[in-house]
Length: 284
Image (cartoon, rainbow, N blue to C red; front, side, top):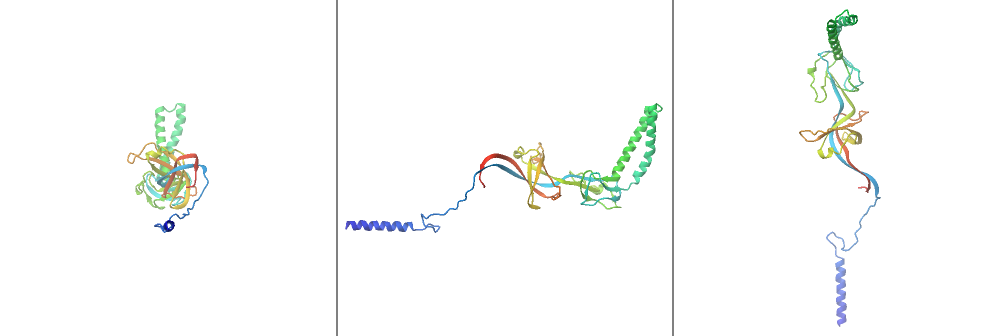
């Protein structure tokens, strides 16, 4: 009888344990059941790792010049239009040359007198004071002619693209007609911009600027041309902070031989501020 009670009690404990092990947790899984875990493996490699910081800026022409005649006058000829690529020294516009012609006509006898006085002075036939007076007049008129020639025929100061023409042929132009652009020298009658390379000016905080140096490579991205990385380099780092923001100006140049990039594009510039070599690494 006593043995039967012990067997019955043992059977009850086994039933209780069995039913307990079959209970499910709050997520519907049997307690104590095996859970499958997916594991992906990869090789550990020795490589260089980088720490990058991203800064924003606007792409601008590397050079920009506004050409304007002085004195004002009528535009006699225009040799270019907006969008034209021009070479350094190429004629861009010609102003009415009536004043230049008159000045050259007055200059010729002064030039002849000066050349004759040089010979006479060398022979002692003209005093030094007389020669100095003639030479002074000659040099003054020579500068006047050169200035009028420069302002009558406007030439490209560097190779680039014409980005502005104020008036058409036959119209009057005065420098007061166009407003100067800060940092660009004014639009003038004709404006020429050098678009290869483009520059990007960045504002860098005081902690990061110490990690940036001239000629460092940078990566440039713009939403205007997605999924494309353009390479550039740091041109210079200003050692003096801006008084208003306490940031340092850093200029980056981006080659643009095909003019794929446009001045005015918003840009993100990635600069590697730290590099470590021979580091054990796995893909993130």
